Every structure is written in C-alpha cells, then in structure tokens.
Image 1: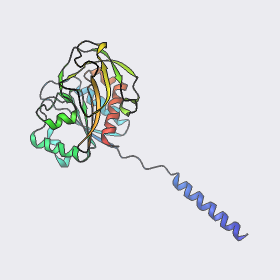
Image 2 (image 1 turned 90 degrees about the vertical axis):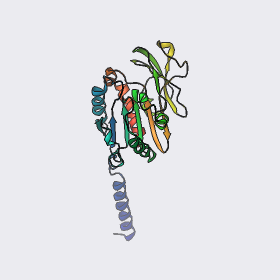
Image 3 (image 1 turned 90 degrees about the horizontal axis):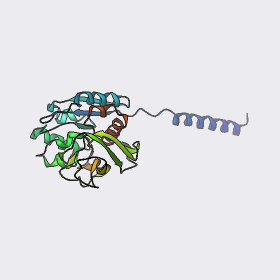
Image 4 (image 1 turned 30 degrees about the vertical axis):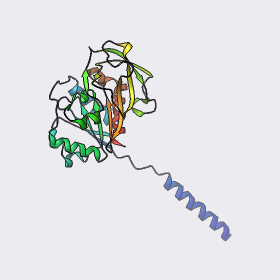
Length: 246
C-alpha cells in the first residue's frame, strides 16, 4: 500500500477514536442536597406534614435529595456542610438560638443557599440579618381567597413555566415593608382580591444574592392543596435549584 495512503488511513482512525471519546456520555450531575427545616414556635401550618412529603416526592424525580427535620441541633457547621441549600418551610417564631444563628450566617456566607416558603417570613423577627436574608417580614393576611399573580420575571426558571397571570387560591401575605435590593419574580394584583395593603407594588416572590450566598423566597404555599399543584411545586423546585447554585 502506498505509504501516503497508510498515513491517511491512520489519521482517519485516530480522528474517529477522538470523536468517539468526545461523544461519550457526560458524567452525571452531582445531586442537589436540601435540608427542609420546619420548626415552629408560633402558628403551625396544617400543610407542614403533607407539604414536606409532597416536596420530597416531587424533588426526588429530579435528583434532589432532601432531609426533613424540625430539630434545630442540625445547625452546626459539620452537619450543614453537606447541604447545598436550607429551606425554611413554614417556620414561625424564633427557631434558632444565638449559636445556631451564627452557624447559619456562616453557612450562607460560604456560598450556600436559602429557600423560604410562605411563613419563613413569619420567623426570627429579632434577627436583623435573617430579615435581610428572607427579604421582608410578614405583617398580616386576609381570608384565603382566589387572586391573580403577575409574572414580572419571564426568564428565571422558578417562574418561566408559569402563565403571565396566574390565578390561584392561597393566603395572601401583607408585609411590614416591601423587600429592597431583591429581584422580584411575582407580584399580586390587589384588584383581584380583598385585603391587600401594598397597592401596585406588592411582591409575592423574589430572589437575591446576599453575603456570598443565594436566597429565594415565595409567599405562596399556605394551603394543603398547593402541594398537589405542579405549577407551584415546580416554582419551588426551581427556586431550590437556583439557590443551590447547581
């Protein structure tokens, strides 16, 4: 065989091998590990038990590994280090002592994530740093009723799947002050229900970066029925994914 032809064939074989190597399946993504924390020292939501189980079941379909607890002793540096994000799920009142607060601040400052659902804003009123992390503190709410949410951010994955106007039934929070320095995802149209106190600027979900970490909050999720709503479950799941940084 012509030597030049041999060289060409060898080159083609080498190129083929390289192409096959490049086409190999990529390694599997590292699972997202989330702590769902639902300790209460004030009002206790009926949805805590069914809701946490529904979130765990839904998340598991997407490779999100969850641990559900109400035990504040998990807030140590060694125990939190393996979690990508911590979800305050319907927490109320003062749910961490001063030592645990410092641990959690350091956890967020290390680049980890926080997810707050509904009553997470009815938590730790005497801890200013937490107030900045969650974005706003709960003030009041009218009776549970239908209302229309307006999608403000059309690109963030936590609401990309949602309709432009999302009508649903929930307990609609008023806040002591509007969140500042956050990226608003959803607002509520106060003309569609009774009891709103913030007029045209009434955010209901937002996200932010704070002290090197990530924070996502949604005021939705009071009712047990919310945890059978895949639009809502996906809203929370994508918030978890964003907060985890993965």
